[in-house]
Amino acid sequence: MAYIAWCFATRRGAIPAGPLPSPLPRVSILIAARDEAATLPRCLASLRALSYPTDLLEILVGDDASTDSTAAVAQAAMRGFSGSFRIIPIADTLGAAQGKANVLAHLARHATTDFFFITDADISLPTTWITALLAHAAPGVGTVTGVTAVHGPRLFHRLQGIDWLLSLSMVQTVSDLGRPVTAMGNNMLVTRTAYEATGGYEALPFSVTEDFTLFRAVLARGYGFRQIFSPEARADSLPILTWPALMKQRRRWLRGVESLPLRLRLELLFFSGFWPALFGLAWVAGPSEALGMWGVKVLVQGALAYFAHRRAGLRLPWQLLPAFELYTVAMTISLIGFRVFGGAVVWKGRRYN
Image (cartoon, rainbow, N blue to C red; front, side, top):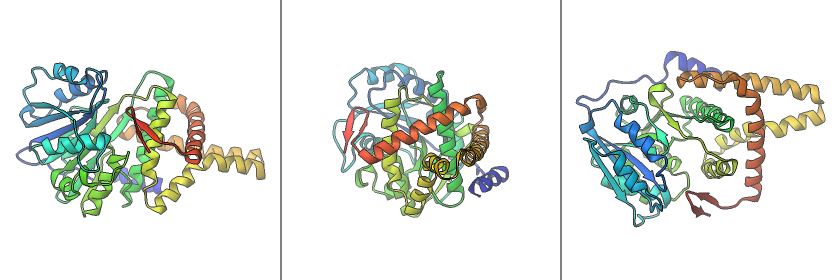
């Protein structure tokens, strides 16, 4: 039923864009960077190409104790930029903030505008990024989140791309039905008033899923939200290169899932438990019944993947769906193992217990 509702919402335009503010406001773009010399130039090049007046852009990069040439590479990439650009060295900790949350806490204090656009160093933004999110920043709205897609040449990279869009489409399905889940911290607008109403990252409980923590805090202060699934608001991310690195990312995300309301956690458990349930069905009822159940799942999942790619302005690589089934099995087994045996989250070279 949620999928059907999502399709109808898509057709009728559930969250229409409003007019842009007039005059156009100055905006701040906040980027946390730790050892991102290889990825940051791509991100900054996309920001230089934004179709937004350069004099209204304030770009702040927080250098989080990088051990490579992140700062020098960023300076070189922005040489000649006519807007405001600064690199902020992060040398101390604000309140309870750690890691990326601490960097963003510092950058928010340095920002001089009323709109914080947050992205990551491995992201490339469309020229329409600012205006696409800004058009949904209506009175009372605290956060606006765009969609993120993953691109890469290898099969492993392309499977991640299907995974991302499927997951984000389900997040928006639930959000459009009035049950907010989370915001994407690599493609998010948060207003200064909403951010400061939470006390900022330095006042929030620390979490390795800092975007989720901020999103929930903004909602708790009575602000609304928008989830935008369109090519104009689509951020393109570089893929995770190895399976162990992907597992580190998903372990971090699981920490956020554990903070969701019980009803949403039970629903996610239902969906993630498909493969164990399928094997159980094959054991009890026989392989033909299990095969039929799997066929229905493949059809529904393929349809959802098709519409998700279409809404994001992309084409679904149908030929990869069989391989994607194996990918989801491996992902399920790996994440169950993590949930059973636990362990610390390691991210960007730091260990979080």
